[in-house]
Image (cartoon, rainbow, N blue to C red; front, side):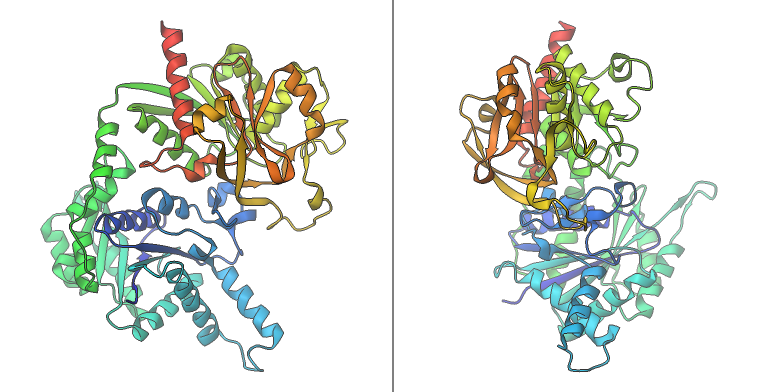
Length: 540
């Protein structure tokens, strides 16, 4: 059977939550026993977000096959079991790059290369490639980045129009829009939605379902008005009011609105009744926590809430698994030494996490944060650069290697404990030069890491250029730093843990990319438990 297709567009304003909505729709459809695939079409001209500033774009999500992708793929992973490879995120940059390379090779036999049909044909081909990742796929959800009316989105929308015309009965268009409440007038306003749909219709796309983001549920009168003015069936106007406690309520709210039944009815998909019991259990735990912990995140991009999106969610997954509520307190790494002593800057948390990042800014603050946690016996979790900060701090202050540093920060250091991968020396282009994707890691039996994972071999996703320098292994291990995880093929350190400390672990990979609310990552569960133990010991 050929898969069906659901295209998700957004209107009125950006940041409406198309990614969360698409992922939640995938969750309710999977609850009905359907096999889902998801594709994000991004209109920007970057080939991928790998070299984009996190302040502008948010986090870069990494797939098993090493693709640097939009953060919405993290939402897809956390909510669904859809296959997520490089075929699940396509940018306009990739499309134009592919078409222009083909033109240079002469594949178009001298034709004039144009947006229509060459660019639109390439977009349609990428949609089909996503559908072919699994031959059992029932429905492909395609999220279009940006907002209807953006110039850069027009080729993608035209491709979707053509795609639907070529497959009558196999496609649906869902338009996510915003219905504001004007406090001064005391009224909900539908005009922005009308204009957004009008813009969509003007380029040949008629929405089948309108999903309305709103502060509170819409009255039937407002829904009927939107139905009338936007030429959408009365039952196909659905509200998506703000959830109260957790984003993991969203699949339940959409199910209550009947969106799953509506999609299956319009696409004639065979299905069973939705089983959303895992999501109900998550919401129950969030609603009735037994205790709370506070984690401090010391990073470079903490002023941008999306820069560490997967990280924050993974921390919450660990708390949910233990029935706890979690407060996240953020610290700018380059300021922890400017506000007095580190003790004064960082006090008030039950544990600290230093996430990944690039560059020199905040480097010393991260090292001093690791020292603070080591000396005070406070739980510390270092991820990627956070692991490197742990190693450098330990080398300087415990192993006596005073000049220890990373060549990323000081290329002339006489003690390069962290250095560039040898095969990447001299590489000029930044894009696509890192160790990316899933790699195996062998864990030493008897280590804390082994007790956490409960198995000798794991696979974790990476995104970094610099590695621990094995010339310093013996001297650091003699001083009490255990290297408990190794990428054996190239003898690269993956896990470091401080012996004699209640919980101080650094990992070179990004475990947050493999955590789901329904399957919390074991490292985050263990870290949150360590914070609870610390809080209990301090409070007596």
